[in-house]
Length: 289
Image 1: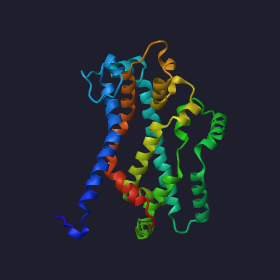
Image 2: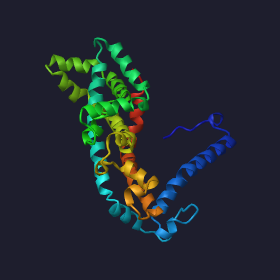
Image 3: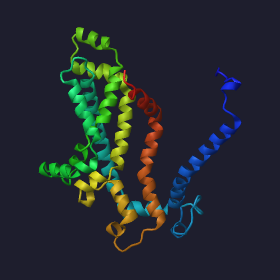
Image 4: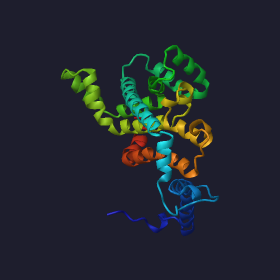
């Protein structure tokens, strides 16, 4: 049975009405552009290029999706993006979890110095490091390779601290009991700490997958081979530099919006599957024990 608020604890009617109106306004402000993109993608070629906002396709058709998928060979950048994002995210979660486990050890030498260094890496804007990143990747032979896209960004300070905060909430008595029983550090890490930090793993995994899926900067920096482009880069050229992907042929608005929907759809589905873990993971991981 849910507790009922007393009359003095309730918001005034005017304030509640104002809150509802603000929420409706925000939903409309965010929802109409998304609805317009979906409606245009399902419209015919002639209707999609008509001026004004479209909120319902009349008649609905999937010709835009069929055209953009076949004509621009969208399958190749789609699978490029899936491969780079999934593999890179798995490695990111492993590295962040290992680093977080090390930082949560109470008797770790130079613990404050390492923590300070990780914090400093979070304060440097990515734009200032682009030239250095390109030079290092060129020296290592990672230009125009999937490995370059996967290795860059394999670890981040935010993920390390999030996992550290999760691991600090695990009672030290569990690890001490496992050590007495002869368990190795790797066994303690995998069997105790990782199992008690599933929400944190899913949180940093979701954030990293979204970041890698939407990443354009690192791809255009390291990849010049169009066959190895990811979806966001191809989408950018479809929307803003049509001649680079379609020659002299004209791409109608329904095909362009179909490319937008196909790029965003996996992330929307991912959110619905991980939203419960994601919300609790951010809150718990942000609290230092």
